[in-house]
Image (cartoon, rainbow, N blue to C red; front, top):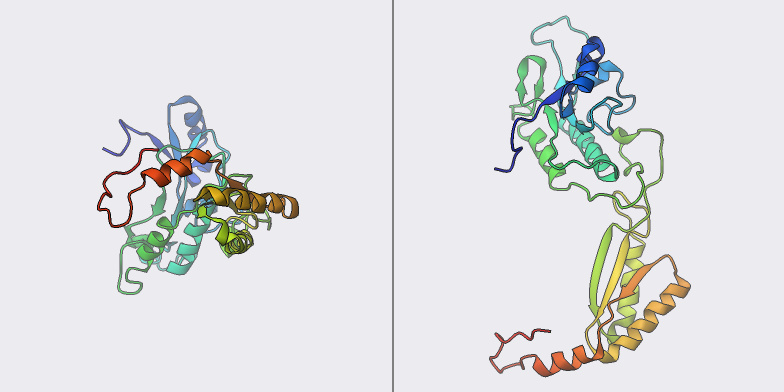
Length: 280
């Protein structure tokens, strides 16, 4: 019901892409709709340089839609004790890698996918130790790390792509600053006796940063609650425009008759007439 309307053909992007030249030709010639990042094969296929647990960018392949992914580990020693190429990602490293991947999704303005998929290697591939399934050692730690990132998926940035917050797994393309721009919008109902508190709030919130924003992250929309407060609030905003032009503060223009009409038609305390909501 919430999935794709019909068959959705997805290519596996891993070391097979390098080993079999027909894979690239297939993506050009056949109507393959997307490719997914198969970790950890990408590490051994020269697609990534710095990322080592989860996807942080699209690959240069003829596939418009690319689904990113991550992996919990890769260790073939259960079936080949002499294997020397094993990679272990504990729950903390896995969670940090997924966090980094999700941050880059939000910061890539060109990434527009209607129904997004994220591929994790794997649920219970015990013979290669790629396991999300709870076990006696880590219990539910991998699932908790994944859940934590899913419920904290960052908002899409409104300006150009930047490197997310300090994360050792996010060192891609050098250390670049975060973006500066609106990430949070605050709608504040205020009146003239709150001028000082309102000014302090604007200063305080404007100085805060977010995981994907360094400065000037908030935009303020002031809604006056009474007519006599309009001029005082307007003076505050005008003064901020002069002294702190980087602040993003504006006020909703409300016609004077709105306040008088609202006062006249609003139910009085104790009248028991609260069901009559004025249509203004």
